[in-house]
Image (cartoon, rainbow, N blue to C red; front, side):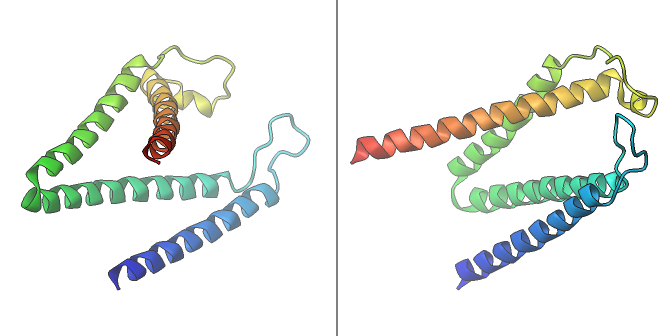
Length: 157
């Protein structure tokens, strides 16, 4: 009973978020530009698209944190060894973010417009590099996990 309820909730959530995202992208690309004919297009609904992206990002991060704490507490009651292992994953993720932030390049970019100069600081540049490198690391781990799972499944047959 609970599994079907969870499945229904997640399906409806995915459907609603997907529909809103399609509408926001449609407004962004179909809403026109404020400076027609210029080389760099400035879309009318850029702010809406950014706000929707920020909302999705922060809700995802918040849910991830809440569910990680919830899982840790519930595992701590039943299986302390698994709880420590799940805590290790969170620590490894934080370490990856710290390492990729440290690897970021703080050199200011050239050729940016006046509005972008506010974000052309060492902190923002290192943060951007951190997210890009972390995404690459996570995508590589996903591909490696898929490959490992396939190889393990073939060897077990």
